[in-house]
Image (cartoon, rainbow, N blue to C red; front, side, top):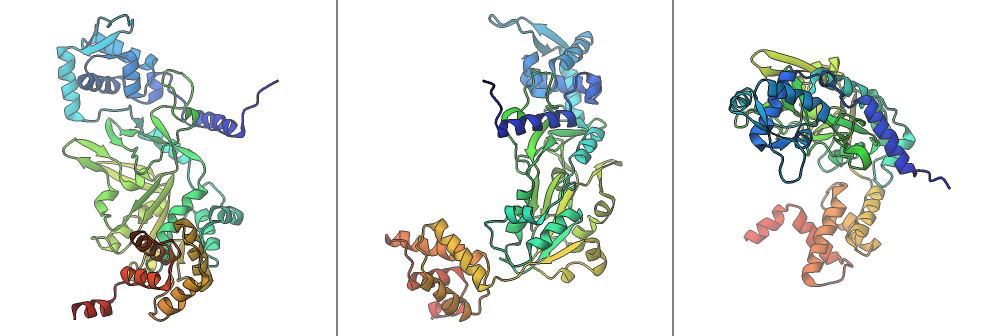
Amino acid sequence: MVAHPSDSSRIEIELDAHLARLAPRPQSLEDTGLTQSFVADLVAKQLLEGGTLTLTELVQRLALSGKILESVLHFMRQEARIEVTPARDSSSALRYRLTDRGRASASDALLRSSYVGFAPVPLHAYAEIVRAQTVHERSITKSTMRAAFEEVVLQEGLLDRLGPSLNSGRPIFIYGPAGTGKTFIAQKLTRLFHDRVLIPHAISINETVVGVFDPVAHRVAVPTASKPDLSLDTGYDPRFVCCARPVVIAGGELTVDMLEIQYDQATREYRAPLQLKANNGLFLIDDMGRQKVPPAAIFNRWIVPMEDKKDYLSLGGGRHFSVPFDVVLIFSTNMHPLDLADDAFLRRIGYKIGFEYLSKDQYRKIWQDACREHGVVFDPEALEFVLTELHERESVPLLPCHPRDLLGIAVDLTVYLGQPRRLTKQQLRWAWRNYFVSFKDADSAGA
């Protein structure tokens, strides 16, 4: 009887083969795109930090094969920068350490660049990978959108506006009152991206290393061979990490400086800006208009990348370079778009999608879902009380966040009182008064 791989195993095997074609494992120093002297400096810095290391340990620290590193180590021995030490115990593995000359050269290398880590990917190779795994070569269909948002209550027609906007490859501007679900829905768009991409630990521009991989923005995909075995000659280049498509979110804390190469004076290391980390994924700029810098300064930063599909960055000292700009760029705001940008800029953004308040039917559906989440017995009369006696009487529009928030506060009270989770009108009114700011309550309390 012949064993056949499961569908999931087959998919993983196909994925591994695809990644290996996309970024094949370097078989020689020339394949890495790095110079011998550059890799030798990386080895020297690792030995300065780690002391005496075996070839296997260097392979793990640099993500380069033993065959490549052996040639570099041979070069370093010829230059009297390293020496071989006796094996420990019964191990037959050779161990390497720096000579006095090697420590001096490693210290010089650290002064030039403090980066100590996996070997970087050259800029030109990174650009090819980004273009090969672009986020824009996909066709989102109506059925795909419905499946991705099957359990989400949305206003009529919203999905049919968001879907085509994703197919366009153009930036998207979503706006509407606070609490209408803009950020929530924008983040859920990543449900449409089921594939995986390769993210480099770092890239090199000439011999300047810029760190790219960020565990906050990049969610590592771990199944089977997504973490390649460094002892093998097959598989994809281990200088990359296999990840879900990136999702980068910046809000009111965003400054223009965060959109440029970051240089840490303390560590003397370069880090990629937010949009470079978001390449091949989604970049959401939330709360537009709440930043400390004028909206025009942030918007103007995107004019050239949006039109050229390239971003132009600087390392300082007149050193400039360009990288592909391959992101689903989404602006989100609670303010009116015309209060943030002029018509000329808004024309450059393909889609302007407004989010509105809920209908009563939509509110009811979310309320029922929230009851299930909180383990609360659904009571139609209690819901009608919230809609008519609270929302209508106090002229509070219906927002998607209200049911979960109000029920959560009411449940907090039942736990405190040791009561069952069948909410009364009194408990819901108490939750309402603790959720919304009421000047009337404040005045009466002060009196």
